[in-house]
Amino acid sequence: MNSIDVGKRTLGVNFNKQGKAEVRVWAPLLEQVSIQIKDKGTLPLEKQELGYWQATTDKIKAGDLYKFVLKRSESEGENTPLERPDPASLSQPEGPHGYSQALDPSQFQWSDKQWNNLPLEDYILYELHTGTFSPDGTFEGITQKLDYLKELGITAIEIMPVAQFPGNRNWGYDGVYPYAVQNSYGGAAGLHHLVDACHQRGIAVVLDVVYNHMGPEGNYLNDYGPYFTDKYNTPWGKAINFDDAWSDGVRRYFIENVLMWFRDFHIDALRMDAVHAIKDFGPNHILREIKQHVNRLMEETGRRHYLIAEVDLNDTRFINPLEEGGYGFDAQWIDEFHHALRVTAGEEKTGYYSDFDGLTHLAKSYEDAYVYDGQYSPHRNKFFGTKAENNPGKQFVVFSQNHDQVGNRMLGERTSQLVSFEMQKLLAGAVLLSPYLPMLWMGEEWSETNPFLYFISHTDPDLVEAVRKGRKAEFAHFHAKGEAPDPQSEETFLQSKLQWQLPEQEPHQTILRWYKTLIKLRKEQPALRHLNRKQLDVEHNSKNGTLLLHRWHDGAHVLCCMNFSGQEQHIKLPTYRQEWYKLLDSAAAEWRGSREPAQSSTGSDSIAAAETISLKPESLVIYASSRHA
Image (cartoon, rainbow, N blue to C red):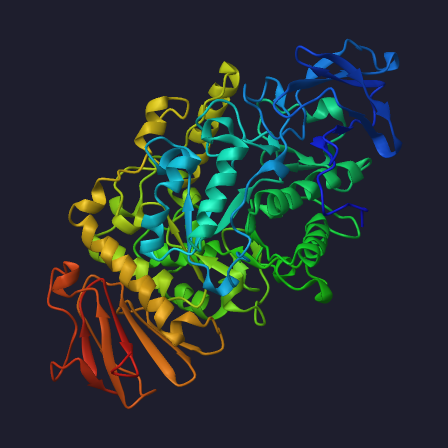
């Protein structure tokens, strides 16, 4: 394992206790490296072991603009010096092609000394995109809505990537400076203020980061050294070099980035994008080494941090403990729950949805997390997955929609545009009543009608055209008809902004109240709050489209009755308890139910076990084992 000081950042321009700038950059194959400080001249760096160049100087102050000047050896042919931004820059005020700016995060004023994260099982996540969440599209815009999120019941916000990208319109997965916070969002200072404000309200902050590729514009890493390898390919081109020659410097670059977010920005958890596209066949996988360093950081600071993976391999190695040979991640996104749920709700079985049969697979995901845990996958044309028998519910993040599943539709339609009002309530319940960590996608809680489209603001016309063509090719797999909105158009971006006036209107006001009620119920009911996958039963009937989810804890039982069909269904309550008491019914008038709510044969809210009840079409009824629940 690399010897990395978890207590401080060593790459880029940093300031020591004496106020001097310590400059360090990795460029193992270059003949000469110097730093050019705007309006102050140029300072040569001295080459050290393992390919690092460094200097200590009092000529650089916080706020100064600078670039590195790189010169190759004459034997490599063209050796005209290149001026490049700092790959570990904390700030790019002029965008990815301009000067870097020296910052000193130790000067941030924090008021969260009493904060030490939440238990992971208490996370109720809310994914958001900074640019479209608020009218002004900044960190300050998010801060102004924190009281709203607190009232909703959210305990953790998950921010889509903020690494510097070209222009001011991007999902964030085209970032090219992992250390620099997007200037148009408010930069490093803006993120600091947002995190501090979240912690003051008891809200954790999860940051989405991308370590599987770099964006196509403003990516100058190759000018510094072998950051990429020809050994493997990813959907975005050459893989990042985590196990080839000179990979030690690359590994350090990303490990220090992880530590920076936790240590210097007080981020509570990182969600790592598509870690299945990270290629590393070395003896200590980079994800495992990251976890080892995070553990060391937590030992030093006493603060708690989590690592969450987006991974579609159905392989528990990513979330199993280090001592069991796993990579030690605390949780993972689980797309298969989403796919099974959407097909159950009527989504067309095209593309990767073709692997899912709806209700049977939804029931399996409630019980087993992974739908495919060793069976043959027709979509993949192979046997796929492994069982997740010993992984607790808190290790799986579930959702009915997210940025990918909405934004990767050609027209970016949200659930509100695809299913009925009744089905929207049912989908919310299916997620929030699950034995997993629930995640909402911004605006779903009030049935937002604006789409979330794919948008960029690249400056290279050829690249823009390539992105347009790539989007068209992607939708061919889903047999989509029509033309995709132009991702480069500002109008595409503006169409994707939330409409904050909607929660004051109907039916948006009612469904927002429905979400608040479900979240409150999840927090207050022990059977729902405790994520014990062993204390759970699922019964389903594919013929009539019903599913009964039974969860319990210390004698407290909750029964969730779901009808995904378009017809009224009659079901017999199981005999787990002698009597059931109704807590919530989505078909009731108070939830703008279009029909009479579910009734027992006696018409009472107190229902005996084994009694038959009628479930209205596309409805959810929740019962508890205690009248006082």
